Length: 496
Image (tube, rainbow, N blue to C red; front, side, top):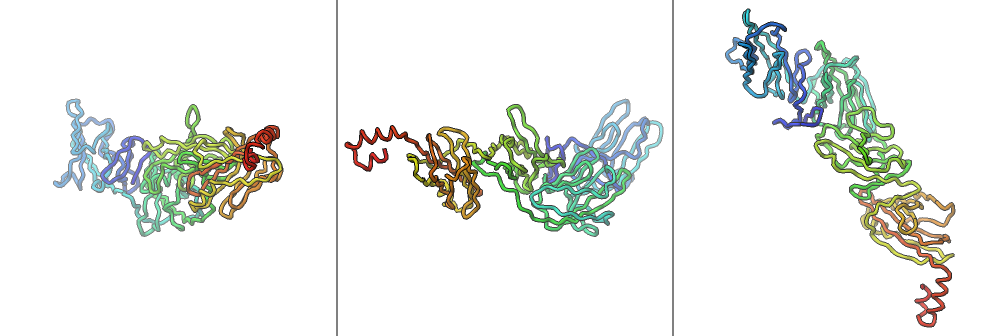
């Protein structure tokens, strides 16, 4: 697939390439090249500015005397009129009498002839030979070679070593090259228009001719990248970079509460998923926004080489938050263009506090508290998660009944994982079992408390449950016992 920036107002051609009708490019290089699917302009070499003309005719063929030549478009200028007659709608002429081809095709390769008919002299013509570039680039020797090491899970920028100054046209391709054709990744033209072939937003080309590798999904462990630079004088320079992919520990995924709600851990690096993008997609650009009450603000774009210092793109276009903080809570949107950016996700940050999401609770229970007693609070959500059979992260927290934010006690990775206690009361009254139960070891309670257990199974949705610990005063307890002792069986009033 091919795609030209800007990605708006796109139309498709018969070969399923995405092109924009708003940018017309000059032919480039020597020999002269046209890029398939792009709108190109061929200047009339026979035209002399300021000369009075009766007409201009464009042909395709070996010469104007060739009976097999094809007339493409003619312009009648006699009597002060300006009437164009194209053989097909894909041909047009601007005021400069150049030939505009709307969406270059394979059949456009060959010789184009421009014939001008002056008012006072004989007609004359001149030709231009062009070659059509499709999705491969002809092999050639390299003027500069270099090497680079790329880590999975991050985007990287490869400089174009043979671009000493801003070139007219730059292509990037991949393959062995030299004596073989290489597969074109994309191109950038002199007006900043960029062309994406096959890989969509996996790659982007900067104004300095560098290649930003946004995704490594299709990159082999060792691969050669080529930069082809066309100077304004038509000369071509090639350089290559031999790339080696190294694995690194992937950023942790954000904890998934629902399809549109996620939690991130304070101070840790985590990734929010771009739910609109699928591997191999043909989108031109991926953008991440943060949304507040008044507007949405761009955080990152696959077409911007400079990334925000606090975040960057993952290899699957997820948003990597390098060190989550309270300011990272809020609404986020991943926009892949083509009208796909309507939804958003809500992000909450877990630190010493745990913000509740208001979602469904799988189970709840109640225990009456008695001072000096140790309690074991089961996590029903952890039991439900065990039935799923995937690893999970368990959080215990507490708050007064009805509070929307709780205080974190600790977290546990199951099965058999690490445990981290927050110990908010600066004592040892809390502990968590390897199975996810919460132990209360002589804790003092002065009012009713709700203990929350949140379980995030890997690649599944949040499961949560709670246990209410209800405190009863000694006065109420004694009154209940005295009044009911003679009327009720012992096993009833002991739990009154």
